[in-house]
Length: 116
Image (spheres, rainbow, N blue to C red):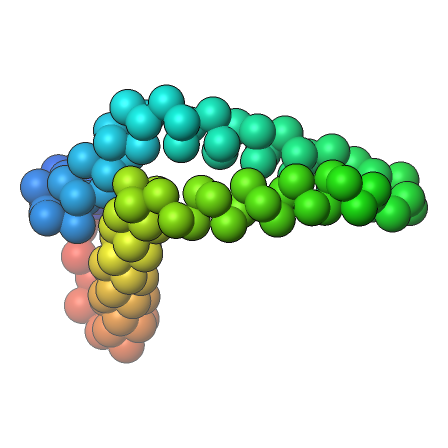
């Protein structure tokens, strides 16, 4: 079973959806401005979540900075490509998951015992 899972992983690594995702990640990593915006956005988001976790309302300045960063990063074409490729890869993985689930369902219904 683990060998077959490894084979599925190898096949997935050869699919266009995976190649596009890897390329989009390389592109966003190479975009210094986008990387800095994403890092700053994560920092501000963490600060906001910590304030909320303490039962405090985040400052309007922090909320505004987060919103501005969010708007700016969403306009970045490399970021758009990353989001699109992530979405396509997730759809692929959902189909793989459903196929595995279907295989499990059929296996439960079968009376044939397959040696492992």
